[in-house]
Image 1: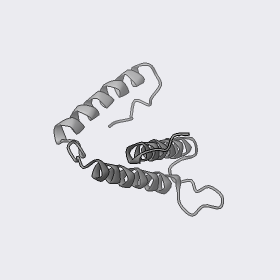
Image 2: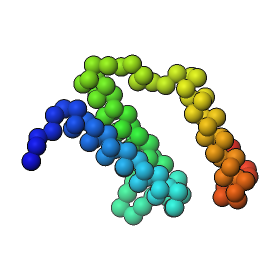
Image 3: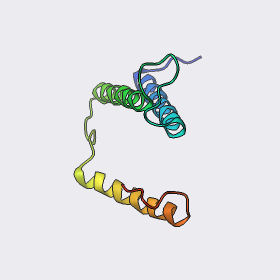
Length: 105
């Protein structure tokens, strides 16, 4: 098979870390943020944060590898735009009876 170059390797690792974050988020949703799985010392929340740190570190290393830091961090405007979009979909979810009406972002 073909051998991966540096970019391909980092992209693979980024995707892997995203998958691990998704896995931890789903476990926390199902069992609660405070739950500690048998034979573990960290809660689901702590494990989720740890996986985010892994992604952040991997992504930062990738950005250094490609030598381009443009857009590394979202602007305040970009974050607010994203939160507004999320709020819009939260409202729809509430209207459809899928999310508690007390939920806020």
